[in-house]
Length: 99
Picture 1: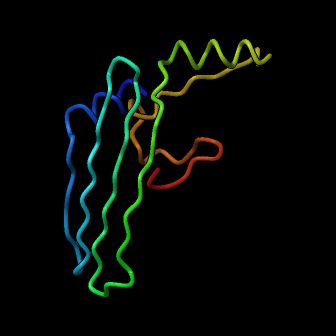
Picture 2: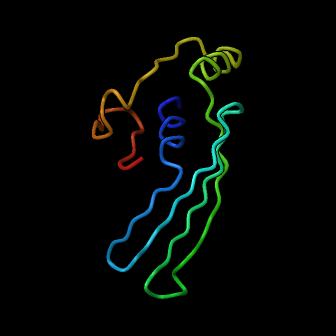
């Protein structure tokens, strides 16, 4: 999540357009609390297909996640750095494309 936090801080607005669909994603990050409010606005060629949504994300540090797993009784935890492996690696159990 450190990588995600850094990305959101470096890219407060991400926007694009393809095939008549336009999207704007805004990220309002609080680095102290490690939270991010993300607003997604999608404008479609047909008005009824347009939508907006808001997400609140809690970007826990690696240590917070490890500690919570340990406290919950998980003793055999494997940590995988997907960013280092590349998002195209689909050999991970439960991995989903494009996530």
